[in-house]
Length: 82
Image (cartoon, rainbow, N blue to C red; front, side):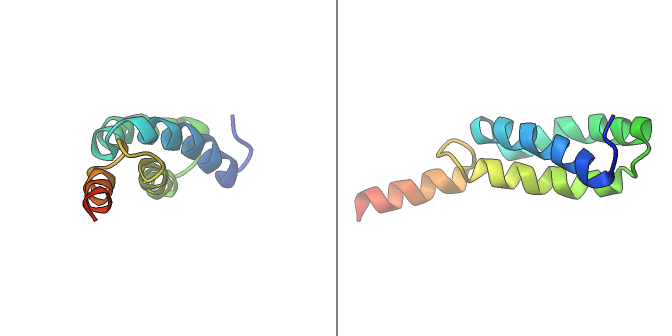
């Protein structure tokens, strides 16, 4: 059980960023929303304080690899042609 909101956010963001590096961001967030809402209620943290970090972590993780987001693939293809 995290001792603060910041600890809960960090505990959420690290695994989401790793997962999102290898899976598309949208399904990761869609699957995690109900889980994060339930977890927030269970630990006494407002779910709203966890949903934005969920989104940010997903975006951050997606930018780390080519397969994380489709934009990375488009840019890589454009750079390869140039």
